[in-house]
Image (cartoon, rainbow, N blue to C red):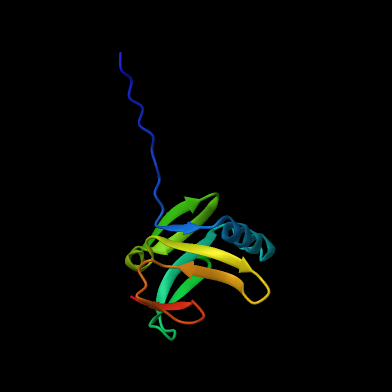
Length: 119
């Protein structure tokens, strides 16, 4: 008798490094973010390269997709996926650089500080 087991695998449109997840959870706890808020990731027009990243805590909106990565709930507007799919968010804590970094395979160009891009 042959038994087939199918496991549900959830694929996320973006990735976080361990350091980024740690920092985001720390910020959420330190800032007393309301329980009905989650991390919002997105893009908006502007910045020196055309688009800027959105990264902050917010309420869910009608057009949002919701997913959970290692216990962190994330909201992302569905239409932003074409700009963000496959992106990795990291946290740097060095002497010359400190903050979140965005490694976006969809970006044609990025600005010098790494917070805006063109696609």
